[in-house]
Length: 350
Ligand SMILES: Nc1ncnc2c1ncn2[C@@H]1O[C@H](COP(=O)(O)OP(=O)(O)OP(=O)(O)O)[C@@H](O)[C@H]1O
Ligand code: SF4
Ligand SMILES: [Mg+2]
Image (cartoon, rainbow, N blue to C red; front, side, top):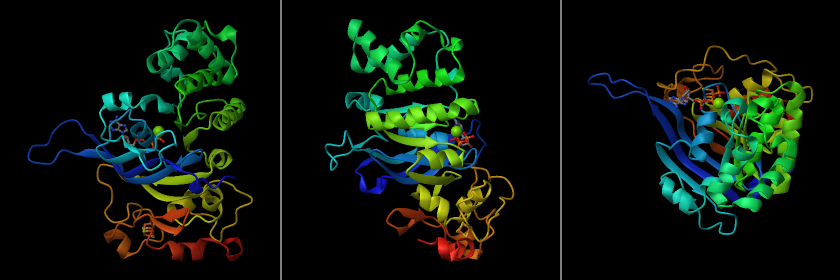
């Protein structure tokens, strides 16, 4: 598998935050916010598939939406490294106005595919118009050229000419997701957020869509941020995995390192919930007790301390930084070495 970290960066996130205001105001008190992203530092490398996992509500979709600027971040920076030709000259897009994004042609370069194609596709539009719409806006093609481009995209996702004049409701779930993928690649993006792209589909078609995405990634030299709850899917598609908890990244590493040498107790707990016959840990079961705390008032210190069996006093006082244990493996935990000693078999260490 490619070592993604040796590739050039395509995106660099620095202290990225997204706070959603809660409607209504309490007199004399500061307005409350949902801290969906609470300081994300992350590099994404050209050509990789970066998996993003974490419990419901931890901020995965928000991160995707902020990166492609469907939502505006509250603060922080987001650097986009062009089309790879000028690595020393990134464009800052977190604070950029929408008109500037359009001017630099960045809008179509960053795309997103959602979990449920039924709601993401306009039910009143024919497939040919659904796919043609972004091409008309971004590439300003028309007439025969536009028709040829739509047809080529449809073929790329495994659909045929017969499908052009149908509405979304006339397709199966898997076919609808193929249409959503065709629309996402219509603007010749470099980077796509795939937000649970197979979770709403029958198990029988999930692998077809995963294989389609993998093959498109190769052919079109795409970079993916792949969001899912399914760790086995992540293992199948990703080069690296980022583990998120309550608006923060807790651990990030190459996929096999995450599965064989998880250093954060939260990663360990997520992994111990699924059967992995080839992965041995001293402490196989670590059941996560309780719910995720509210993102309106995340716990002080380490935000995982209310559920962490390894927590000590320091964890309640001091927030751990995301620190490198190797060039490719970073963890935010004060006790990572103690956790490793207790959870990873000596024979498994690399
Ligand atoms: N538009 C919004 N307005 C207000 N709060 C929001 C909005 N979108 C998301 N949130 C809140 O931000 C937090 C993160 O939500 P998000 O959808 O990013 O989580 P997620 O990790 O994608 O969850 P899931 O796995 O269930 O899809 C949640 O507490 C959610 O309620
Ligand atoms: S810093 Fe402390 S509470 Fe947080 S994960 Fe590590 S041991 Fe657990
Ligand atoms: Mg989501």
